[in-house]
Length: 261
Image (cartoon, rainbow, N blue to C red; front, top):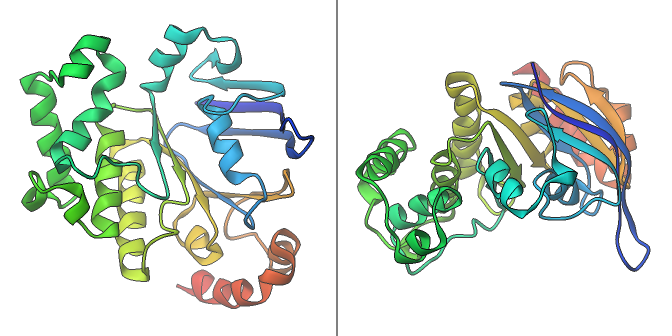
């Protein structure tokens, strides 16, 4: 079943910069899709348009049967509870504990007052603990987030998204700030979330080899246009070169290893 559909989506910024042009694709429930492309290609803009952190200037985005563009403020707030967002720089409150940061994922379900006072149900607290255990963070529940490593912080970010009970995770360069070992841990968890929980993942990645290893499907973006949409098995060195231009040399060397593994 189609969960997300983008129809002729465009984004032009006020200065005239065109970030996205004529973007068309659909994502099925339970699919793991990587969006690859060089810095400045429009990957982050695309993800932020899906949950209307950024407004589009053309086209339509349909999520879970609803047109996102036409939603009023309260309707959008409700829709966003189904869309978990994971950021490159984690977006945690460093002075708060791990579990407090995770429970912030429930704010979309709260009244303003309950959110401001930090009132959470026992069920919500139990769910937070269960998710933290799944993500291997049970020993860090009450630690302040500024005492964690980058990989641990990103797992807290994932837990905060999961406690929303989302239908999709939008992951914006989730491993860009991490070393290879921590990156593998994060990607393994994201893949597990798709395969075991059935939650769709749409992941922006700069690393082609990672996209080849984990994805059901790859979408390549160049200068705001989709230039590849297909399986990781079918992408060629030439297509990667088209997406990345002069950066492609080192990335293509990675491709052989990923296909072989």
